[in-house]
Image (cartoon, rainbow, N blue to C red; front, side, top):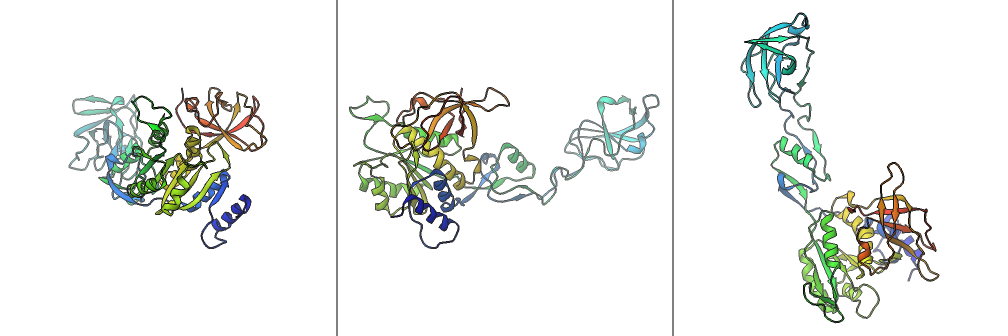
Length: 439
């Protein structure tokens, strides 16, 4: 078997199209290599569907969208006032105002019948079509009306307060590009151009699987030797925060044959599978055997960082299948660092990839145990209180991968390089931002 360095080299050759044939599963891959491999292997999900515009908020547009009309579809007024001909006001001043005859009113949604003539003015409302013959308008606040006469005390400028047809969007123009996540503004643009429906990429359906027979049902007394299942709720809730709608999680037994059969059926309903638990090397860590039973095309096994090194992923019937640790924080760390960037590509949502930045450490961390100190990701809280300066980052006291309660309030991971014995107070560190709201 290749060592890790040779495996990385083999992957790079394949990903740059310099070597043919199937790719070898990587073991103990570094984070950047794992991400590069998944980016190469995973293809965006391209199923699409038409949705009513009012239900498309947050969806990703599947095609470029062009207008079939000008917006606005006619020359119009920008405010309430009076439409007129600029040349009729050239000599107007406060001392020598010009008097124009008011010959009608134009409301939004109506048109004035005849062309406006010399010396005439037309009352006009915001958004109403400019009368033919008028080339400007002045707001009513600066004008005086006496019977049917409009008193104009200054010269108007050509096209003053005049909005041209197509000034916002011209007929045939692309106004929403494919791959755009639709916001309220995009939906307003679609409505303004007469679109009733829009073609969007189908949201990936995500199945959450929790493996193990150690779970007691919530709401009932905890049985001896059992625990309540928090990982299922944690992952479904996190996916919901990121804009997905995962199903409620399934519980799988520690039996590889039964679990393989359940997954075989469940996969028919999902585009992506994410499991937690039974992915390490214990007697009841069954997911590697499940992969073999299902003939999953395995891509990565174990990762070269902690927590979350226990990991397995592959493609089952071309559907991505990610297996995370059963330890709560280890599961979350691998989800944020590996699964979330993969979902960004699969769902056409690049903004999902976590961002990085620098911060000043305001806690001391004593490092890992033993001589071999792998790369670590530490849960932490960013504080942006000092404007214009680097944010400060604080570590909770407990960094155990099995501890859940110290995760509350954390909004980033501190990236601690391999081999470091400690992180001193005041050190500049790199952080991976989780984009969670923190108090």
